[in-house]
Image (cartoon, rainbow, N blue to C red):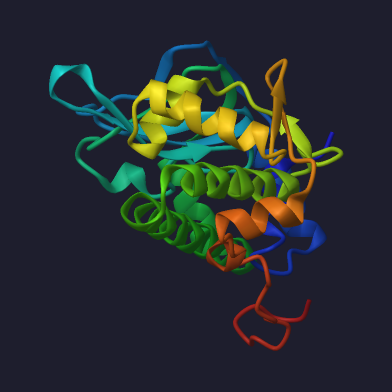
Length: 248
């Protein structure tokens, strides 16, 4: 079975067989998180780093009156905050409304990796920078794009991120997320989210049935969304001559 973490980190640096073996061992022991459960809750003291291996998770905040804002979707290969164990307590929650499989990684293991595995360390830096770039793009979306283009942009992003880890087939992918979840991610009402989704369907930009999303014409959706994947940094910088990484 393909390892989504290895597949993702290959975009960050040139991993060798030893690196891949280390990462395979790191992700060997998984556990299942049931639907509507938190992986980490706001206010709790974090001890482990969590890695998503299957399914979807999200970062979110609960506001006064129970309102929720989703600030990131986490897909296979994504860390739920790589350096979170440094913090005294969580300032947001990480949960799954859909169920997912994760790996719990002790803080000491991450420290050992960064001390002993330079290629993996570089790839982890890259992953953190991609998370920051994605957050910036979400802020631009919420501040400057209309809801229909914002939703289209999110779908384009998920298509690319899931394709990186081998989760896309025939321009389609599993999409267990509800319209209420989309509304909480886009900062709009569920009614508005429903109208926007129906409009995208009417235009032939998306098909969504049986918890699977398909993009009939990717080029058309990308143009409509004004989507540029540059913030995902998938064009790897050549590190072959980096003396700190040795011969590849």
